[in-house]
Image (cartoon, rainbow, N blue to C red; front, side, top):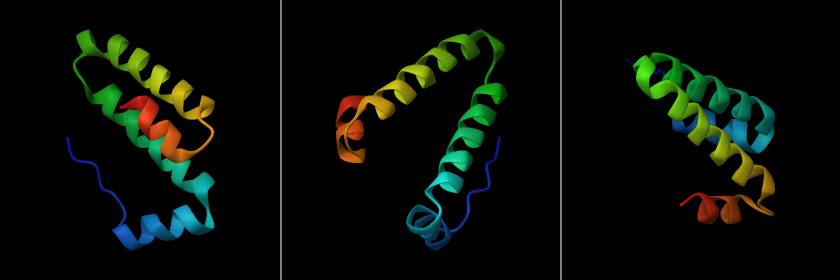
Length: 70
């Protein structure tokens, strides 16, 4: 189970210039990770990811989202 991430500088560039692309990458990697997990854990992982996504949407800032999730 290996997930190839772009280099840090590329991720930073995406965050600054195309945050939607970075978000698509995040969603894709999360989905792949859940799909690659044993089937008995997938439902719970999808539920957890849903809760994380909802906290991120409700937060007024990225820092607020980080605090709410942690």
